[in-house]
Amino acid sequence: MDTFVYEIDGKLYINLTNRCSNDCEFCVRNGKDSYYGNKLWLSKEPTAEEVLALIPDFGYSEVVFCGFGEPTFKMKEVSAIGKELKKRGFFVRINTNGQGNLINGRDITEELVAAVDKVNVSLNAGDRDKYYEICRPVFGEDAFDAILDFASLCKDRGIITEFSIVDVLSEKDKEKCEEIAERLGIRLRIRKYIQDS
Ligand code: SF4
Image (cartoon, rainbow, N blue to C red; front, top):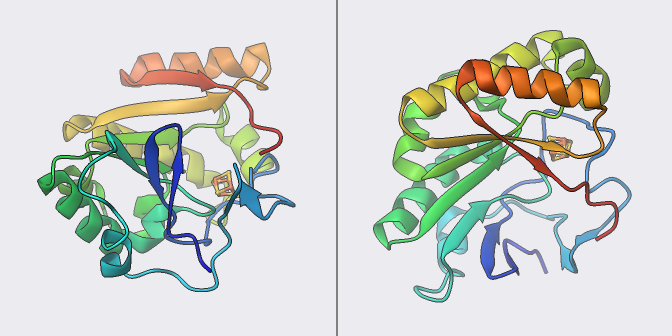
């Protein structure tokens, strides 16, 4: 049975798709079929209604779009689900690779304002060459600059916006990420690399 919604540490996560525009060498799904015991490979993508039917009205402070894929591939569903959850009083976050504008071929950040309270953008690298090398984006070497633009637009539209990197980056790369975050006025969170789940 497909896992459209799963729980970790008291937060509810929504798994909308397995599609991604990257092929990161450190991806948590590489060679795995589950994440903290949740089987996140999907045989079909859910509708907004199917997801909403699985979310209880109470018991969770935060709902997060985050699964075995890039949620902005499902922008229609992100909008519909996010708007409804915000109406119900949930704090809504999306974890994204920041390529949503490239994926959708338009600026999705205005739609995100209505659908989420917070955007977490995986920065992953301190410059475009390194990003291209380790994340292998289908959009090529320009993906990195598009990610920075996307994060800036989210911030400018008033969404709480955060970059994240994993703690296995070199000190030099971390410094470059810190410089970017400071220049754009976006908080940088350094999170632990999850090796096995
Ligand atoms: S962007 Fe995220 S889901 Fe996509 S390949 Fe990279 S780590 Fe995996």
